[in-house]
Length: 210
Ligand SMILES: O=C(O)c1ccccc1NCC(=O)[C@H](O)[C@H](O)COP(=O)(O)O
Image 1 (cartoon, rainbow, N blue to C red):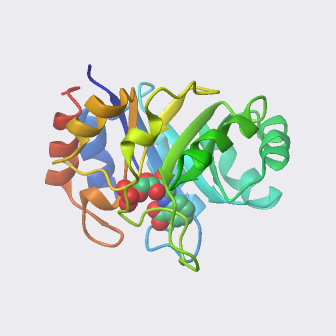
Image 2: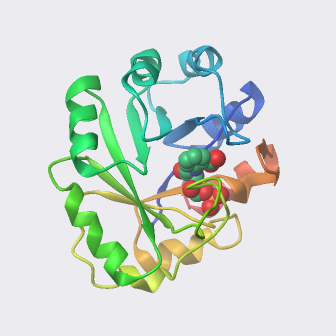
């Protein structure tokens, strides 16, 4: 079964174009200063304006304040929240009136079950690999979790699979988990924050969409 895909952490017109041409359903812009993928809101707005309707812009945030959300939400279709409690996610959803994705860091089955806390507070769960203690970033680390932790799970919300995916493993990941939406960042880069047009194309081809 083919899956749709979000290419995360884009910062240039050329790589955005590769994602669009390859058939991505979503593109992600990271608004988090410590990230090598951090993008200024003005540049993200300009890139987002070039997207066709079929491709949704997703803003990626780490427990954002209202000011950052106000500056970015107008050109986004969804906000992806890391390290954000369910009550705050619900308040953000009410405030920005955008689809809210809650990132759930996974190392154990208990982590997966924790996604239920976002029922009623978010619109989608993004299962991502749990970073090591003290990691500078909550995502974009190229780490994967045991996909079998999703076996038999009754998901509380629509969901997406993330963490350590790349052009060579994404087809397996889709086969094992049944994910209908996959998300990638470092797996289509040549260095942290440097996206690669060919890898983006290969990743999207491997999802079975293009
Ligand atoms: O990618 C980042 O730099 C980042 C920074 C702060 C919060 C989240 C971040 N990324 C979130 C994503 O959606 C990534 O695509 C996801 O963690 C998967 O990353 P990867 O394992 O590198 O494919």
